[in-house]
Length: 485
Image (cartoon, rainbow, N blue to C red; front, top):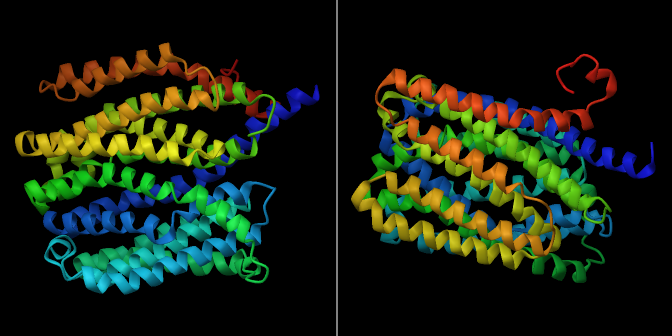
Protein backbone atom coordinates (compact mmCIF):
# COMPACT_ATOMS: atom_id res chain seq x y z
CA UNK A 1 0.00 0.00 0.00
CA UNK A 2 1.48 3.37 -1.02
CA UNK A 3 2.15 6.07 1.55
CA UNK A 4 -0.47 8.33 -0.08
CA UNK A 5 -3.22 5.70 0.18
CA UNK A 6 -2.17 4.90 3.75
CA UNK A 7 -2.44 8.58 4.73
CA UNK A 8 -5.82 8.85 3.01
CA UNK A 9 -7.20 5.87 4.92
CA UNK A 10 -5.71 7.25 8.13
CA UNK A 11 -7.59 10.54 7.65
CA UNK A 12 -10.93 8.77 7.20
CA UNK A 13 -10.29 6.35 10.04
CA UNK A 14 -9.38 9.16 12.41
CA UNK A 15 -12.57 11.01 11.49
CA UNK A 16 -14.57 7.78 11.86
CA UNK A 17 -13.03 6.78 15.21
CA UNK A 18 -13.53 10.27 16.64
CA UNK A 19 -17.13 10.24 15.41
CA UNK A 20 -17.74 6.89 17.14
CA UNK A 21 -16.30 8.16 20.42
CA UNK A 22 -18.36 11.35 20.23
CA UNK A 23 -21.38 9.23 19.34
CA UNK A 24 -20.95 7.09 22.46
CA UNK A 25 -20.83 10.21 24.62
CA UNK A 26 -23.47 12.23 22.82
CA UNK A 27 -25.88 9.39 22.00
CA UNK A 28 -25.83 8.05 25.53
CA UNK A 29 -26.35 11.50 26.96
CA UNK A 30 -29.01 12.48 24.44
CA UNK A 31 -31.02 9.37 25.23
CA UNK A 32 -31.07 10.57 28.81
CA UNK A 33 -31.99 14.07 27.67
CA UNK A 34 -34.95 12.58 25.82
CA UNK A 35 -36.09 11.16 29.14
CA UNK A 36 -36.17 14.68 30.54
CA UNK A 37 -38.73 15.95 28.04
CA UNK A 38 -41.72 14.11 29.59
CA UNK A 39 -40.57 15.34 33.02
CA UNK A 40 -40.40 18.94 31.81
CA UNK A 41 -43.71 18.80 29.97
CA UNK A 42 -45.54 17.15 32.86
CA UNK A 43 -43.93 18.95 35.83
CA UNK A 44 -44.03 22.46 34.33
CA UNK A 45 -46.96 24.43 33.01
CA UNK A 46 -46.71 25.70 29.44
CA UNK A 47 -46.07 29.22 30.81
CA UNK A 48 -43.27 27.97 33.12
CA UNK A 49 -41.76 26.01 30.24
CA UNK A 50 -41.88 29.20 28.18
CA UNK A 51 -40.10 31.19 30.92
CA UNK A 52 -37.28 28.63 31.25
CA UNK A 53 -36.86 28.60 27.49
CA UNK A 54 -36.50 32.40 27.35
CA UNK A 55 -34.00 32.44 30.26
CA UNK A 56 -31.86 29.75 28.62
CA UNK A 57 -32.02 31.53 25.27
CA UNK A 58 -30.92 34.77 26.96
CA UNK A 59 -28.05 32.92 28.66
CA UNK A 60 -27.04 31.52 25.28
CA UNK A 61 -26.90 35.08 23.97
CA UNK A 62 -24.72 36.21 26.86
CA UNK A 63 -22.18 33.35 26.74
CA UNK A 64 -20.40 34.43 23.51
CA UNK A 65 -20.38 38.08 24.64
CA UNK A 66 -19.01 37.30 28.09
CA UNK A 67 -16.43 34.80 26.84
CA UNK A 68 -15.55 36.77 23.68
CA UNK A 69 -16.38 33.49 21.85
CA UNK A 70 -12.90 32.40 22.95
CA UNK A 71 -13.87 28.72 23.08
CA UNK A 72 -13.88 28.74 19.26
CA UNK A 73 -10.31 30.05 19.29
CA UNK A 74 -9.42 27.37 21.85
CA UNK A 75 -10.39 24.69 19.32
CA UNK A 76 -8.79 26.41 16.33
CA UNK A 77 -5.43 27.19 17.96
CA UNK A 78 -5.35 24.35 20.47
CA UNK A 79 -5.45 21.75 17.68
CA UNK A 80 -2.85 23.62 15.61
CA UNK A 81 0.57 22.22 16.51
CA UNK A 82 2.20 25.59 15.77
CA UNK A 83 0.89 27.07 19.03
CA UNK A 84 1.56 26.35 22.71
CA UNK A 85 -1.45 24.78 24.47
CA UNK A 86 -0.69 26.42 27.82
CA UNK A 87 -0.68 29.88 26.25
CA UNK A 88 -3.91 29.15 24.40
CA UNK A 89 -5.68 27.93 27.56
CA UNK A 90 -4.39 30.76 29.77
CA UNK A 91 -5.54 33.42 27.30
CA UNK A 92 -8.94 31.70 27.10
CA UNK A 93 -9.35 31.80 30.90
CA UNK A 94 -8.34 35.45 31.16
CA UNK A 95 -10.85 36.45 28.47
CA UNK A 96 -13.67 34.39 30.00
CA UNK A 97 -13.19 35.46 33.63
CA UNK A 98 -12.76 39.11 32.64
CA UNK A 99 -16.08 38.96 30.81
CA UNK A 100 -17.82 37.40 33.82
CA UNK A 101 -16.56 40.21 36.08
CA UNK A 102 -17.98 42.83 33.71
CA UNK A 103 -21.29 40.97 33.50
CA UNK A 104 -21.47 40.87 37.30
CA UNK A 105 -21.15 44.66 37.35
CA UNK A 106 -23.72 45.27 34.59
CA UNK A 107 -26.48 42.75 35.34
CA UNK A 108 -27.87 44.40 38.52
CA UNK A 109 -28.52 47.59 36.58
CA UNK A 110 -30.27 46.06 33.56
CA UNK A 111 -32.22 43.29 35.28
CA UNK A 112 -34.49 45.81 36.99
CA UNK A 113 -35.66 47.42 33.75
CA UNK A 114 -39.23 46.67 32.76
CA UNK A 115 -38.30 45.11 29.41
CA UNK A 116 -35.74 42.63 30.82
CA UNK A 117 -37.89 41.91 33.88
CA UNK A 118 -40.76 40.97 31.56
CA UNK A 119 -38.71 38.14 30.11
CA UNK A 120 -36.63 36.84 33.05
CA UNK A 121 -38.94 37.73 35.94
CA UNK A 122 -36.92 37.41 39.20
CA UNK A 123 -34.28 35.02 37.93
CA UNK A 124 -31.38 37.43 37.22
CA UNK A 125 -29.04 35.84 39.82
CA UNK A 126 -29.68 32.35 38.46
CA UNK A 127 -29.20 33.73 34.94
CA UNK A 128 -25.75 35.07 35.90
CA UNK A 129 -24.67 31.80 37.55
CA UNK A 130 -25.99 29.85 34.54
CA UNK A 131 -23.87 32.00 32.17
CA UNK A 132 -20.78 31.60 34.38
CA UNK A 133 -20.93 27.81 34.65
CA UNK A 134 -21.98 27.36 31.02
CA UNK A 135 -19.17 29.51 29.59
CA UNK A 136 -16.46 27.91 31.75
CA UNK A 137 -17.68 24.39 31.01
CA UNK A 138 -17.64 25.21 27.29
CA UNK A 139 -14.10 26.58 27.53
CA UNK A 140 -12.72 23.62 29.50
CA UNK A 141 -14.46 20.92 27.46
CA UNK A 142 -13.30 22.51 24.17
CA UNK A 143 -9.75 22.63 25.48
CA UNK A 144 -9.87 18.96 26.45
CA UNK A 145 -11.07 18.27 22.92
CA UNK A 146 -8.19 20.38 21.53
CA UNK A 147 -5.81 18.20 23.56
CA UNK A 148 -7.40 15.29 21.65
CA UNK A 149 -8.61 13.71 24.90
CA UNK A 150 -11.69 12.58 23.00
CA UNK A 151 -12.66 9.76 25.36
CA UNK A 152 -12.56 12.12 28.35
CA UNK A 153 -14.66 14.67 26.45
CA UNK A 154 -17.24 12.00 25.63
CA UNK A 155 -17.30 10.61 29.16
CA UNK A 156 -17.79 14.11 30.58
CA UNK A 157 -20.82 14.52 28.32
CA UNK A 158 -22.34 11.35 29.79
CA UNK A 159 -21.45 12.44 33.32
CA UNK A 160 -23.10 15.85 32.80
CA UNK A 161 -26.34 14.38 31.53
CA UNK A 162 -26.58 11.75 34.27
CA UNK A 163 -26.18 14.43 36.90
CA UNK A 164 -28.71 16.65 35.09
CA UNK A 165 -31.22 13.79 35.00
CA UNK A 166 -30.83 12.99 38.69
CA UNK A 167 -30.99 16.64 39.75
CA UNK A 168 -33.98 17.35 37.49
CA UNK A 169 -35.94 14.47 39.01
CA UNK A 170 -34.95 15.68 42.48
CA UNK A 171 -35.82 19.36 41.96
CA UNK A 172 -38.92 19.00 39.74
CA UNK A 173 -40.58 15.80 40.98
CA UNK A 174 -39.45 15.59 44.62
CA UNK A 175 -38.98 19.19 45.76
CA UNK A 176 -41.28 20.59 43.02
CA UNK A 177 -39.53 23.97 42.73
CA UNK A 178 -40.46 24.56 39.09
CA UNK A 179 -38.39 27.03 37.06
CA UNK A 180 -35.75 27.38 39.79
CA UNK A 181 -35.30 23.61 39.92
CA UNK A 182 -35.02 23.39 36.13
CA UNK A 183 -32.19 25.95 36.11
CA UNK A 184 -30.41 24.64 39.22
CA UNK A 185 -30.22 21.13 37.74
CA UNK A 186 -28.30 22.46 34.73
CA UNK A 187 -26.12 24.86 36.76
CA UNK A 188 -25.00 22.26 39.29
CA UNK A 189 -24.36 19.68 36.56
CA UNK A 190 -22.15 22.13 34.66
CA UNK A 191 -20.27 23.01 37.85
CA UNK A 192 -19.63 19.34 38.63
CA UNK A 193 -18.39 18.84 35.04
CA UNK A 194 -15.96 21.75 35.37
CA UNK A 195 -14.51 20.28 38.58
CA UNK A 196 -14.35 16.84 36.96
CA UNK A 197 -12.41 18.12 33.92
CA UNK A 198 -10.01 20.19 36.02
CA UNK A 199 -8.93 17.23 38.14
CA UNK A 200 -9.02 14.42 35.57
CA UNK A 201 -7.23 16.39 32.80
CA UNK A 202 -5.04 18.23 35.37
CA UNK A 203 -5.89 21.49 33.68
CA UNK A 204 -4.07 23.62 36.23
CA UNK A 205 -0.85 22.56 34.47
CA UNK A 206 -1.90 24.64 31.47
CA UNK A 207 -2.35 27.92 33.38
CA UNK A 208 0.85 29.96 32.96
CA UNK A 209 0.66 33.71 33.44
CA UNK A 210 4.40 34.25 33.14
CA UNK A 211 5.68 35.29 29.73
CA UNK A 212 2.15 35.56 28.37
CA UNK A 213 2.17 35.45 24.56
CA UNK A 214 0.52 38.78 23.69
CA UNK A 215 1.03 38.16 19.98
CA UNK A 216 -1.00 34.94 20.24
CA UNK A 217 -3.62 36.71 22.37
CA UNK A 218 -4.02 39.34 19.66
CA UNK A 219 -4.27 36.66 16.97
CA UNK A 220 -6.86 34.67 18.95
CA UNK A 221 -8.96 37.76 19.60
CA UNK A 222 -8.73 38.79 15.96
CA UNK A 223 -10.09 35.35 15.08
CA UNK A 224 -12.81 35.01 17.71
CA UNK A 225 -14.14 38.58 18.15
CA UNK A 226 -15.89 38.60 14.72
CA UNK A 227 -17.48 35.32 15.82
CA UNK A 228 -19.27 37.09 18.70
CA UNK A 229 -21.77 38.88 16.45
CA UNK A 230 -21.80 35.84 14.17
CA UNK A 231 -22.78 33.55 17.06
CA UNK A 232 -25.21 36.13 18.38
CA UNK A 233 -26.88 36.37 15.01
CA UNK A 234 -27.25 32.59 14.85
CA UNK A 235 -28.67 32.65 18.34
CA UNK A 236 -30.98 35.49 17.34
CA UNK A 237 -32.06 33.42 14.37
CA UNK A 238 -32.75 30.48 16.68
CA UNK A 239 -34.11 32.29 19.71
CA UNK A 240 -35.86 35.28 18.14
CA UNK A 241 -38.63 32.78 17.51
CA UNK A 242 -38.97 32.35 21.28
CA UNK A 243 -38.79 36.04 22.14
CA UNK A 244 -41.11 37.17 19.37
CA UNK A 245 -43.55 34.32 20.04
CA UNK A 246 -43.62 35.40 23.69
CA UNK A 247 -44.12 39.03 22.68
CA UNK A 248 -46.89 38.45 20.13
CA UNK A 249 -48.56 35.27 21.44
CA UNK A 250 -47.61 34.87 25.14
CA UNK A 251 -45.51 32.53 27.30
CA UNK A 252 -47.87 29.57 26.84
CA UNK A 253 -47.48 29.61 23.04
CA UNK A 254 -43.72 29.92 23.41
CA UNK A 255 -43.84 26.79 25.56
CA UNK A 256 -45.55 25.00 22.66
CA UNK A 257 -42.89 26.29 20.25
CA UNK A 258 -40.10 25.12 22.55
CA UNK A 259 -41.63 21.63 22.63
CA UNK A 260 -41.83 21.71 18.80
CA UNK A 261 -38.03 21.78 18.60
CA UNK A 262 -37.48 18.70 20.75
CA UNK A 263 -37.93 16.09 18.01
CA UNK A 264 -36.16 18.11 15.25
CA UNK A 265 -33.23 18.44 17.66
CA UNK A 266 -32.63 14.71 17.21
CA UNK A 267 -31.45 15.47 13.66
CA UNK A 268 -29.09 18.21 14.82
CA UNK A 269 -27.81 15.92 17.59
CA UNK A 270 -26.86 13.28 15.02
CA UNK A 271 -24.99 15.92 13.03
CA UNK A 272 -23.37 17.42 16.13
CA UNK A 273 -21.77 14.04 16.87
CA UNK A 274 -20.20 14.02 13.41
CA UNK A 275 -19.63 17.79 13.40
CA UNK A 276 -17.31 17.77 16.41
CA UNK A 277 -15.12 15.10 14.79
CA UNK A 278 -15.34 16.90 11.43
CA UNK A 279 -14.21 20.20 12.94
CA UNK A 280 -11.10 18.51 14.33
CA UNK A 281 -10.32 16.69 11.08
CA UNK A 282 -10.81 19.80 8.94
CA UNK A 283 -8.23 21.67 11.03
CA UNK A 284 -5.69 18.86 11.32
CA UNK A 285 -6.03 17.94 7.60
CA UNK A 286 -5.87 21.52 6.32
CA UNK A 287 -2.53 21.03 4.55
CA UNK A 288 -3.06 17.50 3.19
CA UNK A 289 -2.62 16.79 -0.53
CA UNK A 290 -5.97 14.97 -0.79
CA UNK A 291 -8.01 17.72 0.88
CA UNK A 292 -10.50 18.31 -1.95
CA UNK A 293 -11.36 14.61 -2.30
CA UNK A 294 -11.56 14.28 1.50
CA UNK A 295 -14.09 17.15 1.75
CA UNK A 296 -16.17 15.74 -1.12
CA UNK A 297 -16.44 12.27 0.43
CA UNK A 298 -17.16 13.61 3.90
CA UNK A 299 -19.92 15.94 2.66
CA UNK A 300 -21.41 13.18 0.52
CA UNK A 301 -21.62 10.70 3.40
CA UNK A 302 -22.85 13.45 5.71
CA UNK A 303 -25.71 14.15 3.28
CA UNK A 304 -26.73 10.49 3.18
CA UNK A 305 -26.85 10.15 6.96
CA UNK A 306 -28.87 13.35 7.37
CA UNK A 307 -31.39 12.39 4.68
CA UNK A 308 -32.02 8.92 6.11
CA UNK A 309 -32.26 10.16 9.72
CA UNK A 310 -34.55 13.06 8.76
CA UNK A 311 -36.78 10.80 6.68
CA UNK A 312 -37.03 8.29 9.53
CA UNK A 313 -37.99 11.02 12.01
CA UNK A 314 -40.55 12.48 9.58
CA UNK A 315 -42.03 8.99 9.30
CA UNK A 316 -42.49 8.67 13.07
CA UNK A 317 -42.92 12.26 14.24
CA UNK A 318 -46.68 11.99 14.97
CA UNK A 319 -46.67 8.79 17.08
CA UNK A 320 -43.47 9.85 18.87
CA UNK A 321 -45.01 13.22 19.76
CA UNK A 322 -48.21 11.61 21.04
CA UNK A 323 -46.20 9.22 23.23
CA UNK A 324 -43.33 11.46 24.31
CA UNK A 325 -44.71 14.99 24.69
CA UNK A 326 -47.12 15.93 27.50
CA UNK A 327 -50.80 16.45 26.56
CA UNK A 328 -50.62 20.22 27.03
CA UNK A 329 -47.93 20.40 24.32
CA UNK A 330 -49.46 18.17 21.62
CA UNK A 331 -50.07 21.19 19.39
CA UNK A 332 -46.31 21.09 18.69
CA UNK A 333 -46.96 18.36 16.08
CA UNK A 334 -48.24 21.09 13.75
CA UNK A 335 -44.81 22.72 13.51
CA UNK A 336 -42.32 19.90 14.05
CA UNK A 337 -42.32 18.51 10.44
CA UNK A 338 -41.27 21.88 8.98
CA UNK A 339 -38.59 22.27 11.65
CA UNK A 340 -37.24 18.77 10.95
CA UNK A 341 -36.74 19.67 7.30
CA UNK A 342 -35.19 23.04 8.28
CA UNK A 343 -32.70 21.30 10.57
CA UNK A 344 -31.00 19.68 7.56
CA UNK A 345 -29.92 23.11 6.36
CA UNK A 346 -28.91 24.08 9.89
CA UNK A 347 -26.44 21.20 9.77
CA UNK A 348 -25.14 22.14 6.33
CA UNK A 349 -24.61 25.75 7.40
CA UNK A 350 -22.51 24.46 10.31
CA UNK A 351 -20.53 22.21 7.94
CA UNK A 352 -19.58 25.15 5.72
CA UNK A 353 -18.88 27.25 8.79
CA UNK A 354 -16.00 24.86 9.54
CA UNK A 355 -14.43 25.83 6.21
CA UNK A 356 -14.51 29.48 7.29
CA UNK A 357 -12.90 28.42 10.56
CA UNK A 358 -10.06 26.55 8.86
CA UNK A 359 -9.47 29.45 6.44
CA UNK A 360 -9.67 31.93 9.37
CA UNK A 361 -12.41 33.88 7.57
CA UNK A 362 -14.59 34.54 10.60
CA UNK A 363 -15.86 37.81 9.10
CA UNK A 364 -17.58 35.77 6.38
CA UNK A 365 -19.40 33.87 9.13
CA UNK A 366 -20.54 37.21 10.51
CA UNK A 367 -21.90 38.49 7.20
CA UNK A 368 -23.79 35.31 6.35
CA UNK A 369 -25.14 35.06 9.90
CA UNK A 370 -26.44 38.63 9.61
CA UNK A 371 -28.43 37.65 6.54
CA UNK A 372 -30.03 34.75 8.43
CA UNK A 373 -30.92 36.97 11.39
CA UNK A 374 -32.56 39.63 9.24
CA UNK A 375 -34.64 37.09 7.29
CA UNK A 376 -35.74 35.30 10.45
CA UNK A 377 -36.81 38.44 12.32
CA UNK A 378 -38.60 40.02 9.36
CA UNK A 379 -40.67 36.90 8.67
CA UNK A 380 -41.54 36.51 12.35
CA UNK A 381 -42.59 40.13 12.81
CA UNK A 382 -44.68 39.99 9.64
CA UNK A 383 -46.34 36.60 10.01
CA UNK A 384 -46.53 35.71 13.73
CA UNK A 385 -49.60 37.92 14.32
CA UNK A 386 -51.20 36.44 11.18
CA UNK A 387 -50.50 32.68 11.13
CA UNK A 388 -49.21 32.12 14.65
CA UNK A 389 -46.41 29.64 15.35
CA UNK A 390 -46.27 28.48 11.74
CA UNK A 391 -44.37 31.73 11.14
CA UNK A 392 -41.58 30.61 13.49
CA UNK A 393 -41.16 27.31 11.62
CA UNK A 394 -41.25 29.00 8.20
CA UNK A 395 -38.76 31.71 9.26
CA UNK A 396 -36.32 29.06 10.51
CA UNK A 397 -36.49 27.17 7.22
CA UNK A 398 -36.20 30.31 5.06
CA UNK A 399 -33.22 31.75 6.95
CA UNK A 400 -31.15 28.56 7.05
CA UNK A 401 -31.93 27.60 3.46
CA UNK A 402 -30.82 31.04 2.26
CA UNK A 403 -27.56 30.97 4.21
CA UNK A 404 -26.87 27.39 3.12
CA UNK A 405 -27.01 28.49 -0.53
CA UNK A 406 -24.79 31.53 0.14
CA UNK A 407 -22.18 29.57 2.10
CA UNK A 408 -22.16 26.65 -0.35
CA UNK A 409 -21.16 29.09 -3.11
CA UNK A 410 -18.90 31.36 -1.06
CA UNK A 411 -16.79 28.67 0.61
CA UNK A 412 -15.74 27.34 -2.79
CA UNK A 413 -13.27 30.26 -2.84
CA UNK A 414 -11.39 28.68 0.05
CA UNK A 415 -12.00 24.95 -0.48
CA UNK A 416 -13.34 23.60 -3.75
CA UNK A 417 -15.13 20.26 -3.77
CA UNK A 418 -18.09 18.65 -5.53
CA UNK A 419 -21.31 19.34 -3.60
CA UNK A 420 -23.36 16.65 -5.35
CA UNK A 421 -26.13 19.07 -6.37
CA UNK A 422 -28.25 16.42 -8.14
CA UNK A 423 -28.28 14.22 -5.04
CA UNK A 424 -29.04 17.20 -2.80
CA UNK A 425 -31.98 18.46 -4.88
CA UNK A 426 -33.49 14.98 -5.36
CA UNK A 427 -33.44 14.17 -1.65
CA UNK A 428 -34.75 17.58 -0.64
CA UNK A 429 -37.75 17.15 -2.95
CA UNK A 430 -38.49 13.77 -1.37
CA UNK A 431 -38.20 15.23 2.14
CA UNK A 432 -40.48 18.13 1.22
CA UNK A 433 -43.07 15.56 0.13
CA UNK A 434 -42.64 13.73 3.44
CA UNK A 435 -43.06 17.02 5.31
CA UNK A 436 -46.30 17.74 3.44
CA UNK A 437 -47.53 14.15 3.93
CA UNK A 438 -47.50 14.73 7.69
CA UNK A 439 -50.37 17.18 7.23
CA UNK A 440 -52.64 14.64 5.49
CA UNK A 441 -55.58 13.91 7.79
CA UNK A 442 -56.51 10.45 6.48
CA UNK A 443 -54.25 8.09 8.44
CA UNK A 444 -53.99 5.33 5.80
CA UNK A 445 -53.00 7.70 2.98
CA UNK A 446 -50.65 9.60 5.28
CA UNK A 447 -48.61 6.61 6.45
CA UNK A 448 -48.66 4.82 3.11
CA UNK A 449 -47.14 7.93 1.52
CA UNK A 450 -44.59 8.34 4.31
CA UNK A 451 -43.45 4.70 4.19
CA UNK A 452 -43.04 4.72 0.38
CA UNK A 453 -41.09 8.00 0.45
CA UNK A 454 -38.87 6.79 3.31
CA UNK A 455 -37.98 3.61 1.40
CA UNK A 456 -37.02 5.70 -1.65
CA UNK A 457 -34.81 8.01 0.45
CA UNK A 458 -33.12 5.02 2.08
CA UNK A 459 -32.45 3.25 -1.23
CA UNK A 460 -30.95 6.41 -2.70
CA UNK A 461 -28.53 6.91 0.17
CA UNK A 462 -27.55 3.67 1.89
CA UNK A 463 -24.80 2.79 -0.63
CA UNK A 464 -22.84 5.93 0.23
CA UNK A 465 -22.67 4.94 3.90
CA UNK A 466 -21.50 1.45 2.92
CA UNK A 467 -18.81 3.02 0.73
CA UNK A 468 -17.47 4.96 3.70
CA UNK A 469 -17.69 1.87 5.91
CA UNK A 470 -15.56 -0.02 3.38
CA UNK A 471 -12.84 2.63 3.72
CA UNK A 472 -12.76 2.95 7.49
CA UNK A 473 -13.61 -0.52 8.81
CA UNK A 474 -10.85 -3.15 9.22
CA UNK A 475 -10.91 -6.07 6.77
CA UNK A 476 -11.57 -8.53 9.61
CA UNK A 477 -14.79 -6.67 10.41
CA UNK A 478 -15.83 -6.44 6.76
CA UNK A 479 -15.69 -10.23 6.43
CA UNK A 480 -18.67 -10.42 8.78
CA UNK A 481 -20.57 -7.78 6.77
CA UNK A 482 -21.03 -9.36 3.32
CA UNK A 483 -23.73 -6.84 2.36
CA UNK A 484 -21.03 -4.12 2.24
CA UNK A 485 -19.50 -4.52 -1.20
